[in-house]
Image 1 (cartoon, rainbow, N blue to C red):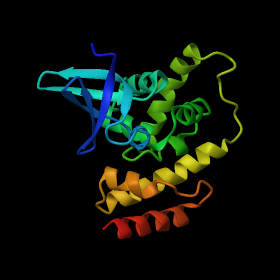
Image 2: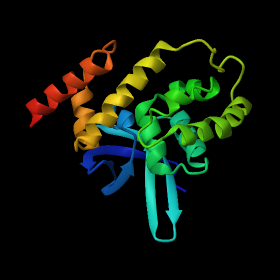
Image 3: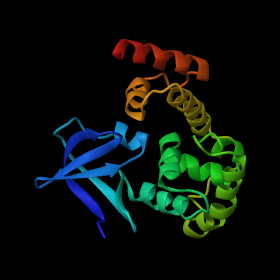
Length: 201
């Protein structure tokens, strides 16, 4: 079991981060949020990892915190949720935001994750709420009232989904969303990203 990797960030291999550990390059699947927080190429980094082994495949997934990894493992334990969908969830929300949505049974927010419909969102809430309650202290449990950060996250999720459906790669979308105004509505955010993508192209 590979618990973490500590080494040099060597760049992207498709949508995976490559971590050079003493001359060995590990390709690590990560959320878009985590990828956007990696250091400049050549910088030192540490990522927590989960190795998934199947009969015909071995995949390594990376996370910038143990909380992010723990939530990923809970997500893939839900019926019908695989690693790709779990990473999409972590790309859409900060771990604390996703926990808030689950704990407050906000199915609409959870369904904004790309590839997650109402039925799957309801299943995620149903299967994870109890598990999260058992592992969180009273101080960590979110309040039921609205969370402004969650509103911002769901707006960003809609824009990401729209851009990916237009044929842009996750790496291009990640670059285009950098520096976006936090209080922008969905239309403004989409225009911002498309303008950046046009300048990149």
